[in-house]
Length: 639
Image (cartoon, rainbow, N blue to C red; front, side, top):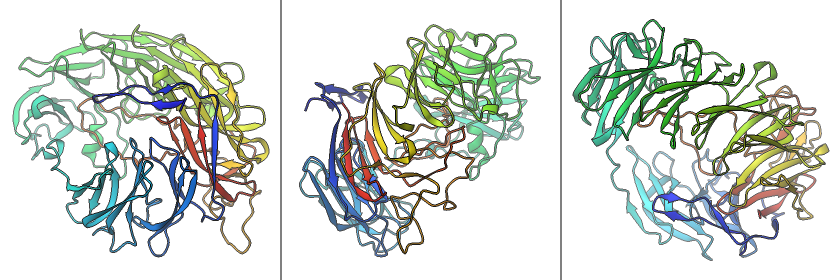
C-alpha cells in the first residue's frame, strides 16, 4: 500500500529504508482483548509489527497464557498451545528481526533448563494461517533468532550444542562447528619473567595475533609487542622505543570480570588494515609527553608519532573513547592539557586529538573559547561527526551545549540551545540524517519536548511538547519518512498518546485513539492516585505500583516510557582488539534514567508493553482504559 516501507539489500549491505508512495496520514487500528489475562510481555517480529504475541505470567504448569494479535486478518485469538520457557524468562516468545516470524518452545516443560525443557518448537508466521510445529531429536533449553527467519535451539548439557531450525520449512539440522578464532588461541603465557602482564591482544591478518606485554598492569615503564600464531607460539617481538610505554586507563574494578579482561579495555591498540600497521596509545615514562607508537607488521622498528606540545589524552576515565573517521581516515581521541592518573567525574576535555592514518601526522583541535566537554558523560559519533556535551555536575548532569568535531574539515563548532530549552539529556544519534535528538529539560527529562541538532547546518531547534502534554519520551525515529514518534503523558495524569513529529518541518500530529483507549504501552500514575483491585494485596499488572513497591525515591525521577535513549557513554573497542561484550536480548529496550530535575509528582510505572519497527514504520502496543484496565492492542502506522 502507499507508505509501505521497502528495504534494499545488496550483498551484505543494507540501504536506508524508503517508502513506496506516500501514506495520507497516520493510521490507527484496534483489536480488543478485554477478557485476556494481564499481559507481562508483548513481542512482534522486526518486519511485521501488525503481528504480535502477548503473554501473561508463567503459570504453575510452566505455560505462559498467550494471545495472538493479527491486524492483517483483523483477529485476536487465544493460543491454545502451551508456550514455555525457563522459569525466570519474562516471555516465551523469540522474535525474528528480519522476517515475519515468532517462535517458542512448546510445552508443558519436561525437565529443567540445564538438561532441556522441550523437544518441540512452534513457529508463528504472519504469512501463514496456521503455526508450524517442529520436532527436535532431543530437548532444548531455549531458542535464539537467526538471520533469515530461522532459529537456533539450544540443547542442554555440557558443552552446550545447537540445532538449526528452518523457520520456513521446519527442517532441523546440526549446527556446523564454530569457526576457529579467538577462543582457539592457546596462550600458555606469552609473557616473560621481566614482562609478566598481558595488556591486550589484537587480531592480525592470516590468523596471527599481537600481544602487548608490560612490567606493570597499571603504570608500565617497559613494554614489548609479541607476534603470535594461533597456537600461541611467539613468531617475532619488538620492544617499545626507549622511554615509552603503553598508556593504561585508571583502574575501576568490575564485578565478575578478571583483571586481564578489564585491562583489554583500558589500552588503545588500533590495527589499520589498509596500511598494515598497529597504533598503540603511549606515554613517556616521566609523563612529559604522549603519542602513538606505530608498529609495522614487517620487521621494521617501531616509530613514535608524538602529540603536539601541551596536548594529552583526557585519561581520567576507565575506558578510553576512540573514534574512527571513515571518510577522513583518522582516529580521534578527546584531548586535554595535562596527563591524568585517576578517574574523575566530570572528566574534562578541551579539544580533540586527530591521528591521520595516511601520513601518521597528529594534530590537536581546541574547542571554541574556553569550552570543555565531559568525557565521562555522553559522547559519540554520527558518521564523521564526533560530539560531546558540557555536562555540569552542579546541574545534575544536564547539558546546555553540544560540541561537534567535523571530521572532514577538521574544525570544531558549538551548538547552543534554542529559547525554551534550558537543558537537554538523553542524546540519540540519527545517522541517516546527520542529526542528534535529545530530550529537552525544564525540570525533568522531556517536559520541554525535544531538541533536534542538525549537524550538517550547525543548527539546533526545539520541538516542544504539544499543549496538554506534560512530558514526552522517545519511541523511535523512522528515517524513511523523517518522522519521530514519541509517547506523551497528558497533563494531570489523564492518559498517554502517541505523537508524530515531522523532522523536516517540526510539525506534530496527534493521532486519535480508539474510544476505549486512555493509555498506550503502560499506565503512568502520580503516587497517591493509585487504587487496588478489591481484595488484592498488590497492584495488578497494567496498573501502577504503590509507593514502596520497588519504585525510586521522590528525589529520583522516573521516565514516562520505554525507548527513551540512554545518556550513558558508549564504548568503542579498537578494531581487532579483544574486549568483553555484554549480549542484549532482542526486542527489549531499557528505559533511561533522566539525569536531572525534580518532578512535581512522583510517577509510578509498570513494564512498557510496546514494539516499534523502523523497517515497517509502525508501532504496536498494549492499551488500557481510563481505569487502568487492559483493553486490547493498538497498531499505529506512521506516515
